[in-house]
Length: 474
Image (cartoon, rainbow, N blue to C red; front, side):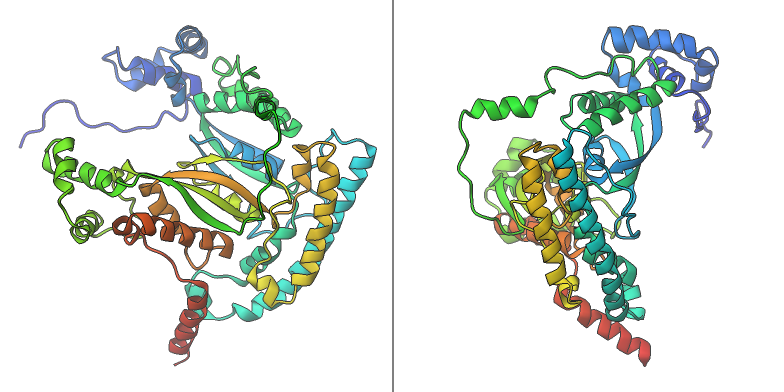
């Protein structure tokens, strides 16, 4: 058959300044020219004028989404990195505590502490790093023995990673890390506004640096990124609105507890799947599903996942029901969980009041007593610092201490989360959270929950490894 119309063209505009790219894409809605023809007529000055009028003047901020930047942030604290990575419409890669032994000299010290608080802080951080170095050497010897052999390599488990995982809880949130960040100008401006309004001085300083660095690439789009009265002091205003302190609850156990869901969520997902496939109205489909038994619904849902591979995303219709979990997990594991930015996460301040978690490998290696002594000392120092500045006292909290947060996710994200975070090579803390999320979903939506793939439980790992070793030896 003879082809019609103009031929398909696909090409990159990465050689152009970001603001020029943004205008090039913006103008295609009203210009018959090709993108490269539009770009040839633009300069950085004319592009700036365009953004000044349409983005700044008229608020057409979507244009700024076409101007993207890749930003290197080095020597930011782990605590600060979590603030940065809380920006949803971005891509991040962070230095890993799993693959690198952290440098004890490279940590953040808040400038707001007075002399006495500063001494308490410095002593606590120093003691934590001493305990970390000693524990890592012993954990590495243990893990080299426990996780040696082809079987563990087949499962993706490495002794060095397991040793780092076992002792990373001794690292303070002040430990410095590096973050690579790819973001569009619209999201970057929003992030800088939040940072400029943030209670942590490290984050406010970072926001100013980002405004300067980003301004070299997208000067017009970041010109008016500054603190806002709405965000500045928001937490203090909310606490003041309570009028009196709320009662303190008991010490929560680590885990994920479902606190809110749609009882008819399975029907909502099924109706949307059938809506796409059949062409019938949504109301008609919901009415039809009221007469369908549970097993039949499960078969229909399973059909929608037929032939799905390990790296396939489930179709978007599975987003039509959601779950809110209250999660309690050590801060080290939270760092991995937080990366699931399609979820909505509601934070509390990091502290030591919820207790800490010592990994099983650390206990098996005989490190539990030494780690607990180090963590208990750190908690004493944190309580001294909280009286001075609760927000900045967070830097003194070791990664082993638990954090409580809300996590709202739709079923599609829950499926992906559990499938990824329950894998055998992952850290035991978030693997347990992933399995708990699957169980909680299955308890209220058995047809949906039973379809989520779950990795091996702890007891199964050794059995699988032994089996693989046996086959390899024979």
